[in-house]
Image 1 (spheres, helix red, strand yellow):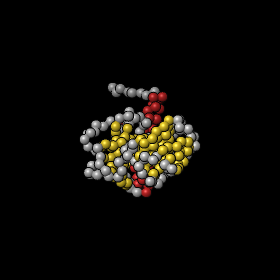
Image 2 (image 1 turned 30 degrees about the horizontal axis):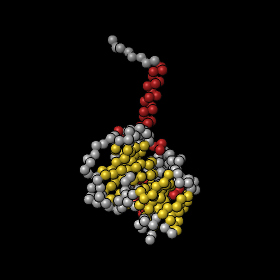
Image 3 (image 1 turned 45 degrees about the vertical axis):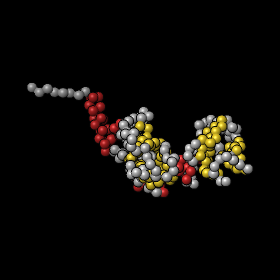
Image 4 (image 1 turned 90 degrees about the horizontal axis):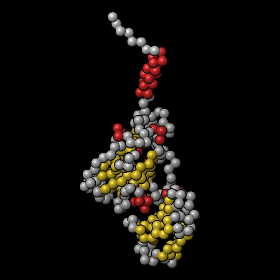
Length: 266
């Protein structure tokens, strides 16, 4: 005698729907997009950060995609980013709903200058179907203090080359931005402008609205001036400051910041 297994109609319908959905999903799987940022210091030591768009990615911790916490040898050159749990990792992943917009801060330790950063601009032409942006990365930029002090736009356009050599002692953290509507320069990050003028060893600073804090750093990162709630204008004595490049930064109560490079020549 044979045992007969019978499905009630609703159950059979559910099973059929499940099979059909699974087949459809596999047939239209989105190819993963991977992009690397490679670092090589002056001794030849190397390390790499990976950025990923994947249809299985979430905004949480995706260990299957490599976002898990890693153990690093503190005696060798390392670069890392933070994952969703704020642990150190060498991979960040985003869902395709965010394509092509990402931003990540890369940190590093135990390196010697010069440090070369390199990438593959060909990967910016991602032609998979069904993307929220039509098939390419429209903008890619790097920012760190060295770039701020060295480049006219205060940002490095990653489309302009496949690498950049950092020679000054201000590299990390390095901010990586990919996507749409990127700022043309740091002066566009806030509507409040900064105007600088030097007369008789006094630096005058005028801002469109009063910041919460103004501080000035030299190119070595040392604070040479700081004041809270200065109003929209202030005057600073600079007779004892050496010639060189300085960074003027104003922080506003709404969380925005404005940076301005200034060169003192005597």
